[in-house]
Amino acid sequence: MSDSTIKSPVTGSSHVIIEEEIKSSIIINLYKTEYHLDVSDYFQEVESVKICKCLDTDYRFYYPLSLAGTDKLYEELQEIDGYYSSGKWEHQVAINLISADAVVLEVGSGNGRFLEKLQQKQINYLGLELNETAVQQAQKSGLCIQRQTIQEHAQNNTDKYNVVCLFQVLEHIVEVESFLQACIAALKPGGHLIVGVPNNNPYLLKHDKYFTLNLPPHHMGLWNAKSLANLEKFFNIRLDRFFIQILEPWYYDKYFGFYLQNFKSKSRLLGLILEFLFRLTKFALFRIRPSIVQRNLQNIFGSFFEGHTILFVFTKELGV
Picture 1 (cartoon, rainbow, N blue to C red):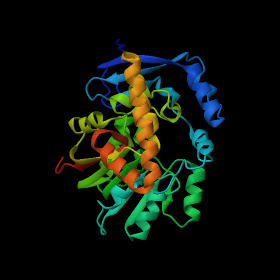
Picture 2 (picture 1 turned 30 degrees about the vertical axis):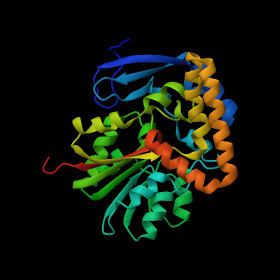
Picture 3 (picture 1 turned 60 degrees about the horizontal axis):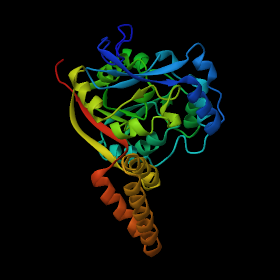
Picture 4 (picture 1 turned 90 degrees about the vertical axis):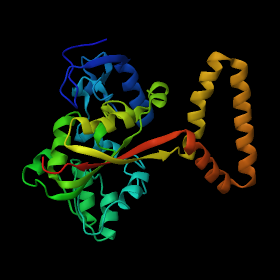
């Protein structure tokens, strides 16, 4: 179903369709039940949330855009243990891509976990963050971070940075076009834009659409590898390489639960047999050598099943 009043946040085009809708009451209840957060104010006069798709890029996004969370939401979320976690997979990958003489800008630094890695390697950096509490915490730790939007920062810092990083940020943004244009403007020609987002591959998007923190007002976009790759068609960047995280061990049960449900819907007997074999094999193996089994399972599953984060590296085109 199409609606000419809905524009793509990436291209500004009305080449958009509405794929489905989710009742606002379901979303409100999920945040209340799982995180004890009252997000009902965001949904005033919004009975249902549309999941739209930009046909030019394959980018899926929630509508209306006014549902995006405010600073208050992130101040509340950061009190949840592990919200700003250390040791993120994308941080480990990205730090190995950045040369020691680079000048780096991280947009959406949170409380500065990646900035700490840059500082430890004595790399010249600056972080931007809008959560005032997170900024204060990072500054107290001696990190170089400012409370400023990338759009504001880019006005006086054109062609300045060798690397601009975004980790788990782009999915929160509703003004995607101006946001990315500002990130690219801040890059030197030939500089690298490193983008890490949750991996909304088609299967998980279809079967895990009620994952609370992947819903408004927290997330406003549903990126996948195809939609990220298509950015080079609309911005002054070219795709160099990308990385897909291996499926994490803590998600095996849930992930295979989706597949088993699918099998059961077609053949209940086959689904029950597969479920029994999976749980029996897992139990037996983990009783023998848990660490070895976990590593082997990751290697096996990583060949077939994508994990929760994708990381793309773009280069700013020269002379444009």
